[in-house]
Amino acid sequence: MNSIESGLLKEVAGSDTFEGAYNIRKDGQGVERKVTENINIITKSDKSGIDIYVKENTKNEFVHIPVIITQSGLTDVVYNDFYIGKNAKVFIIAGCGIHNDHHKDSTHNGIHRFFLEEGAYVKYVEKHYGEGDGDGKKILNPVTEVYLKDGSVLEMDSVQIKGVDSTDRVTKGELGANTNLIVTEKIMTHGNQYAKTTFDVTLNGENSSTHVTSRSVAVDNSKQKFISKVYGNSKCFAHVECDAIIKDNASVSATPEVNANNVDANLIHEAAIGKIAGEQLIKLMTLGLTEKEAEEEIIKGFLK
Image 1 (cartoon, helix red, strand yellow):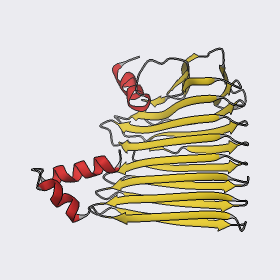
Image 2 (cartoon, rainbow, N blue to C red; image 1 turned 120 degrees about the vertical axis):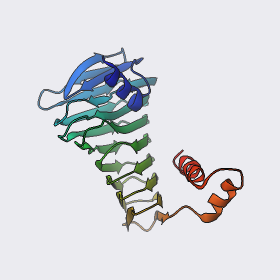
Image 3 (cartoon, rainbow, N blue to C red; image 1 turned 90 degrees about the vertical axis):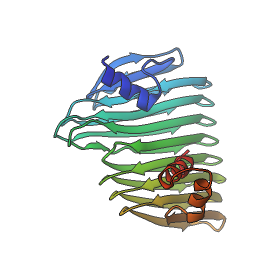
Image 4 (spheres, helix red, strand yellow; image 1 turned 180 degrees about the vertical axis):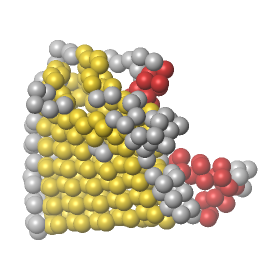
């Protein structure tokens, strides 16, 4: 593995070496894999992608499935399905890093589906990153579908802070009884970048709940769009929060939709979009920071 490939892995997965089960995908092909006694990874026979099987009662094991792209002009589409056994607890680290030094666009479309059995827990971390000096775009379009059976929980952390020119992210969920879907999203766009997020969850089971927190910063001429749709079909709870900082000539839109189809559905949506408050800047500038340094500190804390 060369220095560019190693650097991309470190950006999206925190390391270029992994413990536990893993599958590394490079330029549209699987290049390295390891399975464990409790976690099996099988290549799909009908389309590009893998099936990951986690045995019931598996505890505190890790699965890494990073994707890196260094080939300009490549469009990579992959379908990964996760089958999480009853009462299992696992941590899944995914994400994609693109290096593009040329003129053609490089694209990764990752479609991930999670099927959690009763009592299962998944912490899913996904980071997207782009780099390179070419004018070819770095494009990422992730789709995440979550299906939760009774008493299961999935926590998803999604981060996109640097280098991605265009992204259209879709997260869907269907929740059974006593389940919880927690999503935390952090996005920063620069230049002429575009980022769209669609969150669509259906709360079917009694005492199901979802908590979604989206924090984003849009600067220069970049554009962002956040769409959330929540359907409460039972006694359930949903809280969706979208907060964005806007600078320069950027634009941000948030479109909430809550649909209560049961008298005991409690659905909340909050959205706040605006510039950095002047009093925050003044407070930091009195401590000796320049205005630019103060803005950087505020943004860093906001996206922490």
